[in-house]
Amino acid sequence: MTGHTTDSIIAYADYLQSKHPDEVGFLTRQALREYAGRGQIFIECENNEPAAYLLFYDGRNGNRPRKHPTTTKIIQICTQWDARRIYHATKLVTRLLKRARNLGFESLKCWCAHDLDANLMWHTLGFTCDMQREGGRKRGRIHNHWHLNINDGRRTDPTVRTVNPVPAAAPTPTSTSPQPGFALIG
Image (cartoon, rainbow, N blue to C red; front, side, top):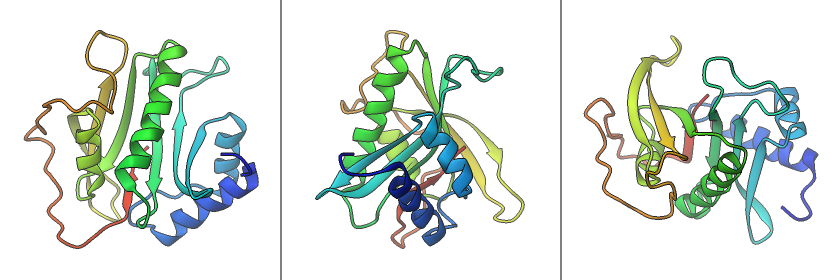
């Protein structure tokens, strides 16, 4: 992240959100600034240029979520189409996993629209799809809930691939057209 200011990171995330509104949920610049102020945006670079970011919420500073106080929630992960998508995503998730584990969290969780290629990424990184919900009315999507236990003795390093079949409740994306490496999560 050397050389990248908070403002440039916010501008990058805002740019990618506006470029791909069907793949990434929208957050205002003010919301992005609040996450950045809490240190809850990670960025990966390629050739010293931003190539991916991960935005998360862990309720640090004594404000843990009441429903799941031991969970770090991934709000958005976004990798540029022309970047090495799974490589940067893996680095971001591994960085978040280490941080969450060091702070005593027990799991990482996120939501991802069922028709996005990002579902394969979550599966590949060792997450399990444990439920689905109806998405917003505008797009009429189903959202998959992805979950990774990080402090219970199971495999916790997403860089090591193990067999973790995608449950029947989590359909694999059927789109044949290329999509950016984005997930609608949050």
